[in-house]
Image (cartoon, rainbow, N blue to C red; front, side):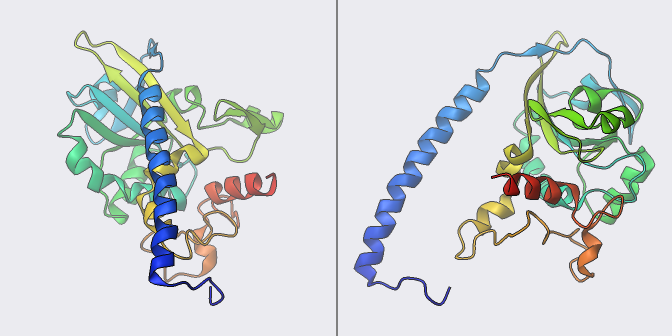
Amino acid sequence: MERHQLVSPDEWLAARRALLAKEKSLTEARDALSAARRALPWVKIEKDYVFEGPRGQESLGELFEGRGQLVVYHFMFGPDWPQGCPSCSFLADHIDGANQHLKHHDVTLLAISRAPWPKIEAFRKRMDWHFKWVSSSAGDFNLDFHVSFTAADKAKGRVTYNFGTMDYMFDELPGASVFYRNEAGGIFHTYSAYARGLDLMLGAYNWLDLTPKGRNETRGMEWVRHHDRYDAAPGAASCCHDEALDPISAFRERHRQAG
């Protein structure tokens, strides 16, 4: 950092204007990509999914809470995990602020995990979150959307994830899925994103990308802690199976090494 190029204010302004042109191109490309995302074909949901939450059992349609659009964050919290994934918690820290506005724009945003609902609720209260979070432990929702994996998947060593196949890593991986409900009550799957496709939802990363050090990561998200554990020892980042890295960090590290 100390050896970073130093220039005059006029030289800096010229360099900044050149970067601005690239930023505007990226914004235009992102707008076009968002339009293409909205234009994707839909798939009608035919299966009757059941979830458990603060209102007892609820169907997928009831999770919309009267709105026309539903965004689900597939939060990594397995049935036998002692706590939710730190990196998923990092993303979840951004949900309550967004929900203050989304619920007034025909969007319900919530989280779904396979952990039993009492365990989910205890962790939600610990983290002082207010968004709705339900359990899918009674059904196939997580399996159908390729974010949870079975003992058979582990034995086989390969799983379907992020619209392709990859080596088995964990019994849970992150994702987000979007649904639309029409006036007749029909529900349609419109979009899903996984892995680095979730970066857009990490507002803190967008702030870090403005700074001289950037994200300053060498092994994925190993620096991230539950927000109530930043004073704990480094090993406190683990959430399951005594992994040295939490699942998202390990996932990112594997793909970084693979280039």
